[in-house]
Image (tube, rainbow, N blue to C red):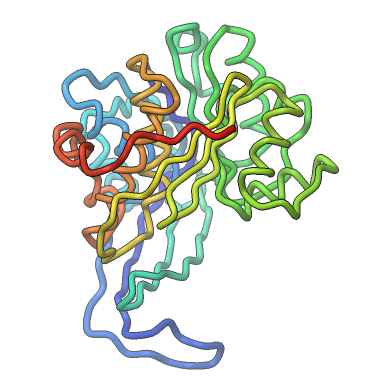
Amino acid sequence: MIVVFGSMNVDLLVTVDKLPRPGETVLTPDYVLVPGGKGGNQACAAARAAGEAAQVHMIGRVGPDDWGPIATGMMEAAGVDVRRIAKGTKPTACALIWIDKAGENAIVVASGANLEATADQVPDALLGPGTRVVLQAEVPVEQNWALIERAHGAGAQVILNVAPACPVPPATLGKVGVLVVNEIEAAMVAESEGLPTGGGPEALARELSGQHGLTCVVTLGGDGAIAVAPDGAWRVAALPVTPVDTTGAGDAFTGCLAVALDRGEGMAEALRWASVGAALACLTVGCQSAYVTGDEISARLAELPPAAALA
């Protein structure tokens, strides 16, 4: 079972030839409203990848407005259990996303009801040894730390995606099973710990893993990902694709990684599964609408070499 606690947004997407500079107005003929938010994205990606075997719960808050159903509808259609999503007093969160013709993006998030998400929305009945609890950093982080404490105490595996980047208390990191970060996020977490940050992504992963006894996964975009665990280290390439929109690729990676671990895959194979899922999510504009099924991932998995063990 996968329990995702975190953010849900409505994303306003616009495609442009080039991202605007400060003070510049750029015209584009159209825009799209789609569901997003790192929590919602990861839950949707997990449910799509798991298919009929999905047992994915999304927990957080939306606003008392017409955008709440937009934020939750695609997740629900994918099979996510949305019954514990509550209504807050603030508006449903909104992300304003510009995407250029190379697939790069710039994003501003108005957090709204995400700021009202609380750890006590997650019932004890969903926490236990058979649960993977997935968290990000778009809700109040003290609520994340409180849920991690409870989840760890109940025997659940905690998968923490520190995005956007923020410091994490050392005592909290000691209760995390899998830390998922990009290189910038890894450096910020390491710096807050007083650890060296100048040695590159593998060195960062080794420092964080060694300091806290966790598995540190550093995503590298088009260069794949690195994972360092107490019992080994691996590097996986990225599936070669021509990206249309990279906006939700990191969330697809985390959601697919959670699914692979939940079904008992080792970290090396889980990295491959997540890497393919993330790459395929770049082939369509949008986040949740771009996520693929487990069958689609399996069909392309042979194109990606096995994860290479690192010394």
